[in-house]
Length: 473
Image 1 (cartoon, one colour):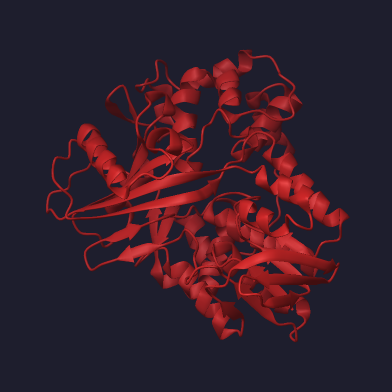
Image 2 (spheres, rainbow, N blue to C red; image 1 turned 90 degrees about the vertical axis):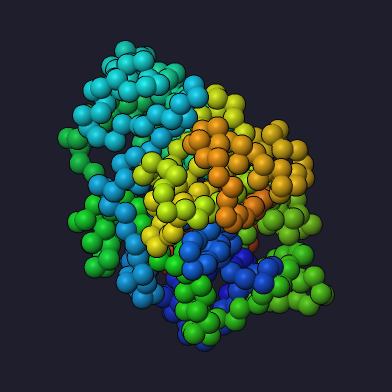
């Protein structure tokens, strides 16, 4: 019997891949999933009405790379192809991405020609950043913050106005703390192995790119051929986890909602007990934990305090989400994906997504304001009222977007400890966690955003990888 802990995308994807592997080629093995809340999907939540959609978490998915293509393969297998809404590279939401600096919105370069032109707030064309890399000496390091790396190789302006806001948008984090390996592992390796990023890129052009091939479905092929930038699902991204849940239920996976586990007890290398809050004990041969690292830390603390300590060293941040709907025939925004605010500006928001441009079948103007992240407690305190976040969001869009209208509808959510932070040393920390599990022969696999990437594609690919490792041993 195999147990999945957590009903977010990680848990649902783990169930999917276990079924695809026929639960490790043994059809007699039972599979059950435990979820503490009354619904699946984790942070992927959609509020639907006839006029608008409010996304509480992710709203679009990138099709790039092996993890991105892998997700599209899953989408087609689940019968979701006809529900996909792609945003191609020529769409305003793909081309137009802005940052807010010095009380002004600036469009970031989106073409090759753009890097040869001077674009505010940058004082020089971005091509000069490449020249800077050629001049800088090699600095041997095991890891570094992504901010320090970019500042060292390409200059402070790029670190402040491109990388820092991008990190805010991806993980609501501080680029001065996040590991360079989070987004730029290959570039960092070029510096370490070849003395510079540009030198490494040139050498890699002649050595070839040895990557594992993935057999592509028609949907994944379309994404490559049509140059999709991102895509979403008509009716809201929550359709994805709900479809996964139905797939698991139809294939006899036992789904236990409103089921909290208070302790995990490892008996031996093939028997583990999950002690529920109500005193009931469930026994499994293997656990796939997809809950946040700090949650798992609490469950294993009694029997494995060292493992618990490792898990608790992975920090998380809280994000405030304010969705706004303006029922107006006149668009209140420039067609674009939205804008991000560099931390150096010291504003109260991380950025704003223009959902009425990114998500199809929306009426009026729909915006999502993101607040807090790494700076949530600094800006809003421990337990701010939702009305406070709404007030700040409306004040900021009035100041930045010049929107004076009151929203027709809104929703405020505080997503507590929702995004893990891959701070410097994260990957060594994860290696230590998995080494501890292996050395102690614990029948548990770790899946999800705490370990292998914070994006939707990363979480799904993590599930596929971990299921594959167990099923081949």
